[in-house]
Amino acid sequence: MTGILLLVEDEADLRETLEYSLEREGYVVRSAATGREALAQAGLEPPPDLVLLDLMLPDLAGTEVCRRLKADPKTRSIPVVMATAKGDEIDRVVGFEVGADDYVIKPYSLRELVLRIRAVLRRTRDRDVEAVPDRLTFGRLVVEPGAHRVWVEGAEVLLTALEFRLLELLMRRRGRVQSREQLLSDVWGITADVTTRTVDTHVKRLRQKLGTAADQIETLRGVGYRFSEPSPRGA
Image: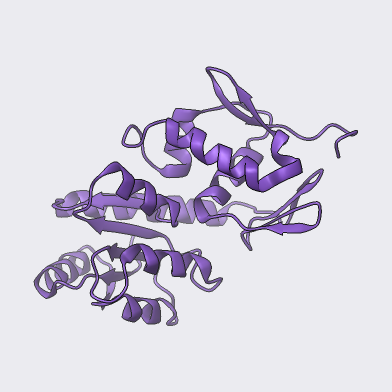
C-alpha cells in the first residue's frame, strides 16, 4: 500500500533520513519544516494521503497544525499521524482531541512507523469505500457525515473531530452496546494507553453539546454506551 505522504519535521537530519526510508517503502514524500509550510503543502493537488506530523515546530505547534487541517473542508479527511517525544497521557489525549488518527512516540523504529502508517491508510481507505449516506436523521438530531456537521432541532452544534467520530460511530452502531474498551479502540485507535475515564469525560461533553438530543446516548452501568433512536413522542 503506497501513496503520497506529507512529512512535517523541522530537524533536517531526521527529515532526510525519513524521506529516504519512506521512499524506499514506495511512498512519494513531500516535506515541510514548519507548520505554515505544512498547511500550504497539504492544500496542493493531488492532496497527500497522510500527514506525518512532528509536534515541536518552530512557528506553529503541531497540535495547531492538526486542528487547522481538520477544520478546513479541503483537508479534514486527510489522516494525521503525530510523531513526537511528548509521550505523557495528556499529550496523547490532546493529540486525539484535535483530530489525530494515530500517535507515535519518539524514539520509534522505522518498522513500527511504517506499520502504523499502513494501518491508518488501510482504515481510511476502507472507510472511504463504504456507502456513506449524505444525511442521518434521528428525531431532533441530524448528522451529515461527509460534511462533519451536526444539528439539533435545526440549530448547528459545533463538535471537535473526536466528538464527531464518537457520535458517528455510536449512531452507525445504534441499538448495540459499545464498551468503553471498544470505543477506545475504534474512536481513539488505541487500547490501554488512555484510561476508560477519558471515554466517560468525552461522552459527558458530547451530551452537553447535544442538549435535547442527549438522551439518545444511553449509559448501561458497568457495560458501556448505546445510541437509541428516539421514541415517537420524543421525535
